[in-house]
Image (cartoon, rainbow, N blue to C red; front, side, top):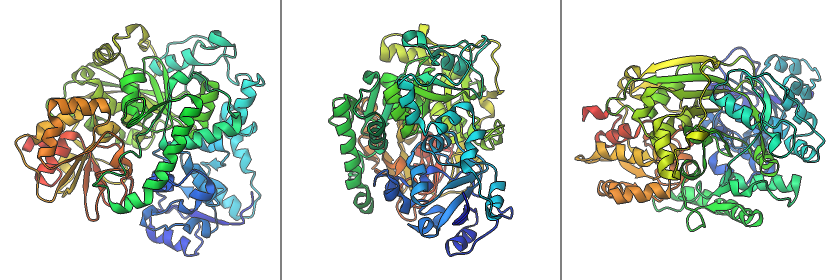
Amino acid sequence: MKLNGRILYLSDDAGLLRAQLDGQDLTYAGQPLHYGVNTDLMISGAACTLGYTGEVLGPWFLENFKETIRKDDVRNGGFQVIVGGDAYGSGSSREVAVVAHKGAGVELVVARSFQRIFQENMVYGGMPFTTDLAVVDRLRSGEDVDVRGFFDALPPFFKQVAEEGGLLSYGLKLLEGQVTPCYDTKVAARPLNVVEKIIAQKTWNGASGSAGLGIAAVAPGDQVLCSAGFRGVHEYTAGMVVALYKEAFGNAPMTNPELIAAFEDHFVLIDEATVPKNVKQARLEPARQLTREMVEACGEFGIRLHGPGRAFKPGVCHRIVVEDYACPGTIVVLTDSHTPTAGVLNCFSFGVGSTAMAFAFRTGLIPVTVPKVVRILVNGAPKGVLSPKDLILHLIGDPYFREEQWRTSPTDTCVIQIGGPALDHWNVDELSVLTNMTVEGGLMTGVVEPCQPIRDFLKTRRGSDMEAEMVYPDPDAVYERVIEIDLDSVPLTVATPGDSRNRVTLADVGDVPIHNVVIASCTGGSLSDLRAAAQVLRGHSVAAGVRITVTPSSADVASDAEREGLLAEFRALGAVVSPPGCGSCIGNGPGIPLPGEVTASTTNRNFDRRMGSAGPVYLVSPAVAAASAITGKLTDPRKL
């Protein structure tokens, strides 16, 4: 590649960004590059409803980034290279973020570090990338840089996939018996943690049938192919997954279709009465088209379909996976970054892109880069309103995770394995917040060690505590780090606008007015979340000028909350109570911020404009959200 276009530095300085868009070519002089350029910024949820090809998405690449870039600015600016800071590609698993780069004319991405799913999507989709910022100077000097050579520095599996022309081309050769594992399958046993045990048990060893699974051990940095258990898609991703599938595999049957489901959850609330008219006009019709593609694919391939009026119950995919599908010791993958939610049930659950899912649908296998594992041991008692939301915001905002101090190479991944006696104070609803939000800390997923809440949940939901399937760590397993936390040292915690890692204690956040309160999503719409909010609200009224939106996360949650009278309590206070769905979390439902509003939300992500419009969003626990609705400002519920 020779530099015949321009270089766009994603500066933290909006003025420098605008200058480049207006034609000025900059040289990197140490100015701060934006931290955590996320996939919502690369291609918004609104643009994602339009389709999944480069032609459609290219004009919308980086629209509204730093409230500066307009539609088609990047493509019309002739930018050939993008340069970003740390944690490039944070957030959603949407592979369309890579497609949007290509559609905008970008041929190379350079960043200080990349987030796992986005990096995998670049490998599988053939987008060259590097963490070597010196490459930019080489290109400027006129050097013809072999960007495909960047793949030579990748681990063996990534390199093999690149050499085979992408993951789906590799998959065809695998199915034809033309490839064998590129990793050592004859390894010595060693003590393993929970994550390593699950991966090792599910690793393809090159044999056929049931004998083809299992090796003695894996270690951080290994790249292996594992047998995938439950797999899932939703409206944003199903069309792209099936299009990729058909292009590579035609109408060949999917492997273990009984372990595949599609979820109509991301678009089901767009047409609700309180959704702003401009949102409906922009999103509703294209969203319906994506939904039609998903429904058609389900009929064609025999995939079970969850949604309102469908054969299987509606709700947010992650909550339903916990309720009905995830099992201890299995591998769960969905085309959504919040798939780690299911890790609460002692399984290895993580998000993947569309190409990886098409591969998994046909082969039954999923590529895994074995992560480093940080063990978190939680002691003490929550004592009142302290919640897992406070704990996870406290954790991912710590410099060790925020700065990815665990990372030693560009392709490193990391998981937190959570245990300790304090877990017994919470139920699976509450504990799932810990695993759900690991991705917000740049982590691959989280896994909860066997504990009584898991056994109680499985006994109730599945009729068995599934103790035989539980995976325990070996006593002398190796960890990247062991962190012990006493809950007495964890404050009520808030994430300030822009990134979930922007932690600050509630006591130090200052006098922040709140106009919009959202109690919703796979993170904040469980039955336990609704109970926690209702308990704070009882006996109080909502402050003038504050509106509340409550969205249960599944049909079961809505039914239970209605039976307990919780939804009636919210309605009596003037709250908008919607049917189950993703909704406002991604700007597709009630609770979207109105102009001038500041939002307190129980959701998991507060990227700029993610909720559908401009306006600061603070992430809080359900109890803090409810207290803030009462006073009209961020409030400690213990003061009421």
